[in-house]
Image (cartoon, rainbow, N blue to C red; front, side):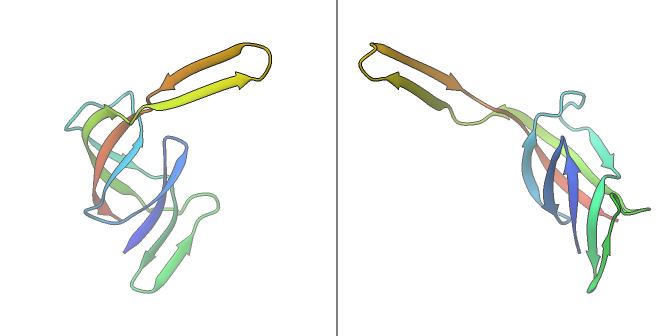
Length: 103
């Protein structure tokens, strides 16, 4: 059984027991149990339900494991013959979650 769920504005394919990294969930602390009903598609024993936009009565439960930052990304800009160089860095914040149940 799997589901395609919307978490923090992005779509993820999940099934029970999966550990995934999603964009940072600001309102939740480590160890919190969260339930979302934004299920776009779910499949159970060969039977697939597609939502319009969400599947009625379907939900996904997950536990927040930790918060963190991703790897550093370097952005380098240069304009030739103008003596312009600029370096920027960015680290995207994420939340690691474990899916406990797909209903």
